[in-house]
Image (cartoon, one colour):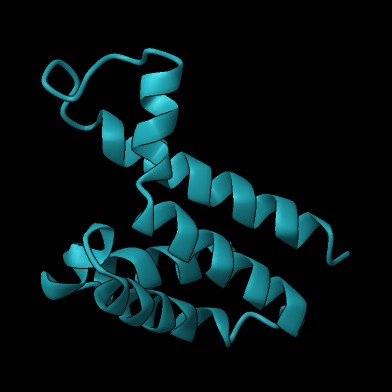
Length: 105
């Protein structure tokens, strides 16, 4: 539960409008990831796991990997399912975090 809370705080509560530019430029992306990782510092993961979560988060957000995945498998487009891109993005982040966390035990 603490991992989910860390993710939700970092990716939603601490993200501002300027950081939404993360898909267009590296500076807002890196600031977003740095801020995103703050709650993760309190969950007791090893440094390598924190680094793995941060790197994946930066790459996924900066390069819109959730959108690329959605196009690759021909998911329902955003004009038909407006919440779809958010759910795909969050599912990818959650799956990666779960994988990394499972490797720490």
